[in-house]
Length: 441
Image (cartoon, rainbow, N blue to C red; front, side):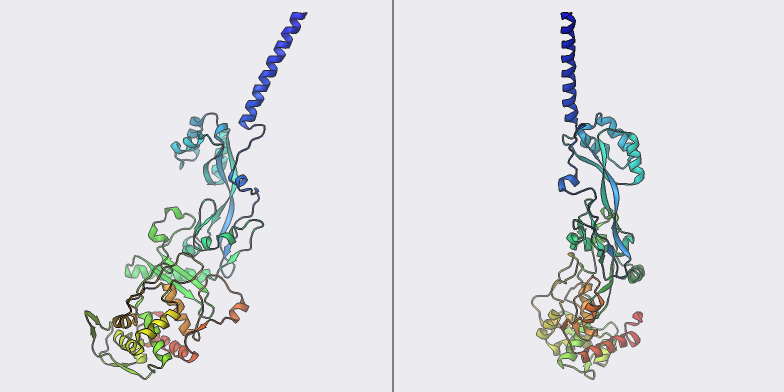
């Protein structure tokens, strides 16, 4: 009887020790209380954290939104057979690299991402494998429904939802604010204008076999940009595969000698300062030689031209002589007030710095009068021309929609008088109906 009791006690002790070892092992594996530090736990955020705010155009058309997707991660300590798991995963997710997956499954950590932003079908295929140690975490994936249409304005985010370019980067904190989902960010863009603008500059690129092009459409009275396109462009849904030249925003980052558009500034300065009137005549019968430079007209009339004719026929000779009458100091001060000699301000961090000539010599004054020797962004030229035609006020350019009350109370810095602005509107129209700008009609 004593022997049987002793054997029973020994067996009970062995079972107790066995269960204790098993319990310790289960705790170690995390089956009783798994503590896997996912990014959401690490950030202290909940599974129902607010999604990144939407971006819409001025009429409420959706430009960027966030959708819930599943991302696959592993707790390597729970993966019983990393080799087999890597084989199965790369079979159902063929875009994965087996070597990298295996390295992550063998990691000494408790958390390793395997793949982010799975499609529902991919999630189902992984689930059907039944591999222990794999799990999913819900994340937000940024979606751009319009594709390439406003890529350089919108920018894009990284896999963690952080803004890397464009509006997404500039307003990263505003769009990704914690707590309840934020109200949509309304841009000044009109997606209809944006579409037409992109089609037009795409057609121009094809016509002239150009390697790139840019265009802007701005409301001259409010500074709101209704369209901004740069080509080549990219798909913000897949920015990783875009070449560097496609990511470059030619409308805002690129600086160029923008040519005859600067004649509008030259004429405006001359009229505003009283250096010239519409009846003033400049001799454009022959080219001007300045040192090694020869200033000539591309559409020569070879005769004296009055101020409207200098502008309408785009005479470099007439503009250069007009600029000499204005003087380099006055010219430079006017361009400075227009914001053409400093980096433009816009709700994009990707902005270019003008290339300003130093020193500002007499030949500089002459060549800048028709847009050579000074490189600026297309955005700056557009904003400057807007100030010449809106009554003479410099209104800061913006990519944000303005309320009607704000639009009605716009002021801006006075650059030229309303009378000079009226004359410039008439001259610009004349250049279209009778001059070199007929394609704009």
